[in-house]
Image (cartoon, rainbow, N blue to C red):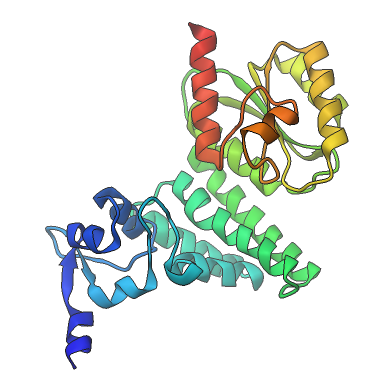
Length: 281
C-alpha cells in the first residue's frame, strides 16, 4: 500500500528534475514532447511519481530506463511498423498540441523511432517489407510536417543537401533539410542516391555557401571521395560529410569533410549557422 500511495503522489517538475538528476528544462521538454505524462492544473505541470518509472534520464544523457524507449516514441514506432499513417500522425499531433516544436518532433520522436526500425531490421526482428513500410510511413509524416518549417523573409544563404550515390536512406536528408529551412536557410534538397555530377551541377547553378553530403551506412567511401573531389574542383562551397556512418571528427576529416557535423541535425544546423557567420565576417 505504501508503494502504491507513493506512486500516486503528485509532484512538480522541479521535484521530477531532482529525482531524475537533470535540468528543469529537460523535464519540461519531456512533458512537451509526450515522453512524460503530466497534467496542467492551471498554475503548473504536475506529474505522478509512478509515471517516472517509464522514464530514466541519466545525468548528461537522454536515455529511458533500462534502454526502453519513451512511451510516445514507442507508440510512434508501433504505428510506423504497422504502416498506420493516421495513427502515427495522431502521435505527432499530440506532441505538437503539448507544445513540441516541429524540430523536436523530428529529432525526439521520428529520428529515434526510425533508428529503432533499423536496429530491429539488423537483429532480424523486422523483415525488409516491414522496414520499407515503416520508412514510407515516416516519409509521409515528414512531408506533412514540412510546411511548418517554412519561414518567410530573406534567406540566410543557400545550402545543398543530398545523400551520396548508392546511399538510399533519404529520411536523414529530409530531416536535415527541414531543420535548415526552419533556421531560415534556402535549401536545395537532392534526396537519396545523388550522383557526383548532380552535386556538382547543383553547386554551379545554385552557388551555395555549403554542401552537405549524407552517408548513413558504410561502403560508400569511393563515392564520397569522388563527390568531394569534384565539388572542390568546381565550387568554393564548404563541403560537409555527415550522417550515421561518420562517428566522430577523425572519421569526418578522413572522408574529406571540412568539419564534423556532429551527432544529429541540431548540431548540423549549429555548424552551418556558425560557418555562415564566419563567411559574413
